Image (cartoon, rainbow, N blue to C red):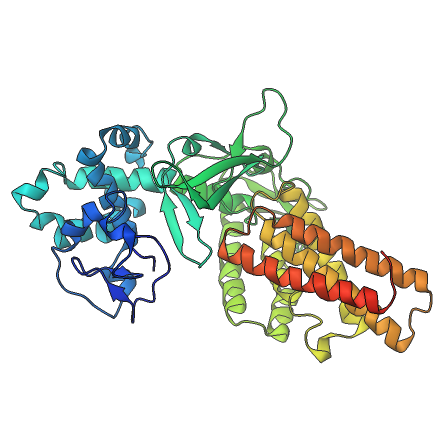
Amino acid sequence: MPCVGCYKSVFTDVGERCAKCGWPVCSGNCPGLKDPKHHKLECDILGLRPDCVLDNMADYYRHDALLALRCLLLQKADAAKWQQLLEMQSHMECRIPGTQAFDEADEFIVEYLIKNFLSKLDSGMKKDIPDISANLIHRICGIIDTNAIEIRLVDGVELQALYTKTCILEHSCLPNTKFNFDLSTKTKDDLYKISVKIVTPITKHEHISTMYSHALWGTQARRQHLKDTKHFSCKCCRCSDPTELGTYLSAMKCLGDENKPCEGIHLPEDPLDDETEWACSNCDVKISNSQVCCVISQMQDEVDNVLMMGGDITVLENALCRLSTFLHQNHYHLYSIKHSLVQLYGRQLAYASQEYLEKKIKMCNDLIDITNTLDPGNARLSLYNSVLHHELHLTLVMMSKKANIDGSIKNVDTITTVLREAKKALNISLECLKDDTEEASGKKLYEVIEQSNKEFERYCKEKNVIL
């Protein structure tokens, strides 16, 4: 949970609290507690609920509701920003009572704020926040859901922020930009500085785009997510292509009919049509989109359960084998399992044989090809790509060491070639992370790879290998 004054990570069960409102803070002396751009304006309002708790902290101290409250306080605190906020898209026409978006906002933010704080405002406080109607809070929730950008701090804290200019970028499932945050520098408004970086060449008349969904979801999952959260139907080049740029990330195997098996693959005839049929590339069998969605949803549950079990290679391999009966080898469910397996192969003696190392190298290269096709500029999958190249590096080095021990590779030039490939993979792994070291996961991964780099240089020096 972030400190309400400076956003540093707070260990809520043992940490300090704000003396006036009781919300968790990094320190009672945090400068942000008295700063009107951070906690000062909201503190008196939050103090209207005097109780403090140690259980169910995330539900009791709701930071998603705190963002909505801070938006409400702009009414008097900063009229210009308040006007900019109201000009943002809220999609209220899609957030009517009975919809998931409305009901969740109503329960977790609107009612939370009104019941615990806003209903207790005295006449003096109401001057600072004149409109506290449920309708306005719902509108603010819509603005946040539609426009907020997630910021991951180095200590693992995740924040949501509203930026008036970057929020207008259009979406593409093959984006040509990415957002970068300079967490060490703040703007004149004391906000984390954001920049939009071009990651692939943009030609004349081409639109500048970012991505508001997950690059490793299939077309049906991405488009449904965008409909549910951003309220539009994506028709980008990737969504329009049944093969998803030749990756076959959503493709399913055809099982034929009761009379004859088939080795073809099922692809949607029109991926932009929710009612499309999926046709086989080799026979006349067709299946409905609803059938595909049902099967994929069930498989998603199985994949989630398998991944939650941690690093059990046997469980992962069994799931991979079972799902491979129905899915194309590049399907995104199988990608998830393989990405976990490549981080496990070679780390246990039973899975460090030449056969497993060669299997891991092929798996890494296959996943790298998919990743580079879906995200050529590392806009969304930089960490995935970095992990794959790092694992490829480690495996090539391991094969080189084994060859030196057992003499399986006697040609020095061949070993040097393998080590050059390992060096190349390591360099790419580091390059993938050049924009991600401000975030906790990127920084941690970069440190791990830097250590591998030092060990690799030491190994090459010991073996008198010049690359």
